[in-house]
Structure formats: structure tokens, C-alpha cells
Amino acid sequence: MPTLNETRIQYVIDTFWLVYVETGKTEFGYGDRLKGGVNIFNSGTNVFETRNLIPESNWTRREWAGRNIPFPFVNHPEKILEKTDTGVKIHFDLFAGAFFFLSGWQEFVIPERDSYGRFSYSSSFQARNGTLAVPVVNYYFDVLAEAIGLATGEKPQIRSHGGKFLAFLSHDIDICKSGWKGGSKWALQTWKWHIPFLNLAGKLFGKDPWFNFSEILRKEKARGLTSTFYFLCRKGWIGNMPHADFDISDSSIRKVMEEVAEAGGEVAMHGSRGAHEELEKFQADLKLFNRKTAGNRFHFLNFDIRKTPKLLEEAGMDYDATLGFSERPGFRNGICHPFFLYDLQSDRQTRVLEIPLNVMDSTFAETKYLGTSPEKARDFIREVATETKKFKGCISILWHNTHFSPQKFGGWGEVYWEMAEELSAGGARFVTAKEIHQLFASGTKDNG
Image 1 (cartoon, rainbow, N blue to C red):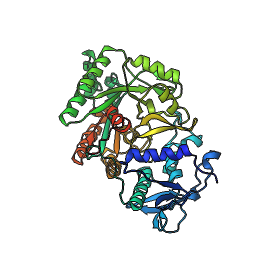
Image 2 (image 1 turned 90 degrees about the horizontal axis):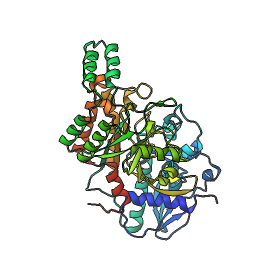
Image 3 (image 1 turned 60 degrees about the vertical axis):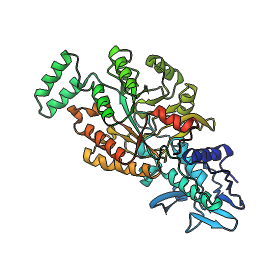
Image 4 (image 1 turned 45 degrees about the horizontal axis):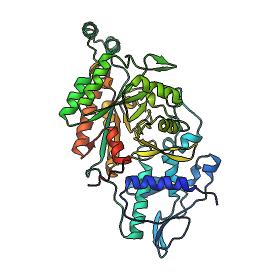
């Protein structure tokens, strides 16, 4: 019977135990009948051998933990989970479903890409099924945890980091020296005639409305926040993609990096176009960055599931923080926790931890994406935060330095500060990406 191979099954099991605290030896049967064990339905699917998607006809919507969830290959008309005389049965192919999302399988087999070379939300399973705001894999894992509890008498608990869910705040630094120009253009378009004169005067004295790092750091410190700053390594345009308006080696930028580090934040690399698919380009970016970094996020969220996981591992990265959709907030890989990337070409788990991106300012502000208002953006963010908190996961939020400026991006800075305060009031623990890697990948048992 065609099925997932042992490597892929173990990847799903390892990811489950990355999220949950191990309770001792638990036996899993994949289509087997284990006395007293957890028996998971084996659909015998051959989609992973033939490099196809799981057909839409093989997905069934069922209620679990208060949400309507898509389950693959359900083999019972009513039950998802059942305790029997021979053990506990899970009546859907949990391994196939979880692997489908975690590995990025849909990106591997769907060839369509947007004008920037990205796998787009519109091509995704989540777009067709309206489930991007639902961490589907976490619900699968909740089924598995319930089954383990029924089989062993001890249900595994989600790994708790200080009893809280995690909040990862980050800033991609793409442009910071052209606010005088971009802000002035916006001001003229909106009949704010005095602003261009103020911007020009500021420019003459070396001040720019988008060079606002000290203000961001000061306000974050006042609120007890910590964040990670990703600095773009290349200047100008590469193909159809704008890059930095500054030189990464400029003394003013290096000074900002030191300010971030002194404030307890993290400085990391923002890989340029092409660096996600060619190791030589990534290494060239590292050389330009010229500073030790544990991780990276790619510019414009470029990521090639066929090449990037292996590339990041070969480059010596501990983590990546790219995987999210520009067009919508939510869970691109169906999980609200960090997880290890899977190299589908070599069919193995890598040692690179992925911290998936859930929320980005540009998603809401730019008309080519959602193009919504700050007020409506708050509702989207709360939906993602609610799901993340439910599973004590990690919400990853990207806010560009430009979006803290009232010039062109008025109202978006307030969304960030209000969002951070709501997360704090809700019990979030704020961490940098490097700290997340230490929690999830170093074997730290921070379960209190």
C-alpha cells in the first residue's frame, strides 16, 4: 500500500513533540492495530510519490475544538476520534495532512508564481478553503494529544514558555533615507502643502521622517517590548524589485545596528532578491552584512520551497522568518508554532527553524494586497492572535520603520502600539527571533 515513508512520518511526530511536552513512550500505528496504542488511519495515498496535491474530494470539513476544520481522507461518517477495545483510533490520515502543510507540499507541486517569483495566496489550498486564519496543523495535533491521553491516561500539554504564548515583533529595514521625498509626494497629493518644505529643511540638516529608529526603540523600551531588525543588504533595484535606499556599510546604519543591540534587540539579515535560490548570492549578502547573524528574512518574502531550505542550512543559518503570504494574514504552513524546514528535494528535515510570518503592515496598507483601513486591520490581527493564544503559539508580526511615520502611513504606527499593548495584556511573552531559536531548537525545557 502506498503511504508516507518513515522519514516523513517521523518529521510530523518530531514536530508534534516540538510543540508538546513528552509524557513518555507513546506507540503510534499507521494503519496498524496496536493494542493500547494510537492507531492513525493510513489512507494509502500516493500523492507524495506522484507529486500531486491531495484531491479536493478527499478533504472533509468537521467540527473540532469549536472550529470547522478540513481533514484529509476521513474514513468514518461521524467520528474523528474513537476509543475502542484495541486502542484509540484517529479516523483521518493525520500524517498525510500534517506533512502536506508543514513541508510546503503545495508550493512544491503547484508551478504558478506571481510577478516577483513568489507562491501566492490565490494559488493556495487556504484560499480555496478559506482557512488561512486557522492553524489547521495545531488542530490535528490537538486530536493527536487527545488520543494519546485516551490511550495512556495522560494527555500531553502544549509546551509553555513561562506559561505564556510568544509574540515576535520585527522590522524590515528597506528604506529610511527617502522619506523626505516619498513623504513630500504624498503631502502634495493630499494637499498638505507645508510638509514638503519641512521635509526639505530636514533633509538639509540630515534628518529624514523615515529614519526613526531611535523613536521606535524608545517607545518599545517604554512598553517592555523587544524586537528584531532585518537590514537589507543591497541598494537600488534588482530586476523589478526595489531594494534599499542606503548603503549597508554606511556609518549611520552601523550606528543604528549598535543602538538596536544595546536596547536588547536583535540585528539580522534581510536577504536580497535571488539570495533565496542561489547560495553564492546569499553568501555575498552575508559578506556585505558583515556582522554575525543567527537568521534571515528574505526581501519581498521570496522563498522557493525547492531550494531555500537546503540553501539556508548550507549557509549556516539557525532560523528563517520568511514564510507568510503578502496578500493575507494567517498561517501559510497551517501552524502557529515555529517548526523545522523540510528539504523536499533531499526528502529530509533540515536543522533550520522556521518562524512563520503571520501579520505584516503592507498586507493591510497596500492596495495591491488587502488595501484595508487601520480599523479593519485590527480585526484581522485579533483573529490571528486569538488562534495563536489558544495553542500557546508564537505570533510573528512585521512592521516596517516607514509605517511608524505619519507621512504617507498615518495611522499604522498606532495600530502597532495598540496591538502590542493588547498582546501584552493578553499574557504574551515578547521575544526576538534568536531567543525563539534558543527555546525551540536548543533542547531547552522551558515548560513552567
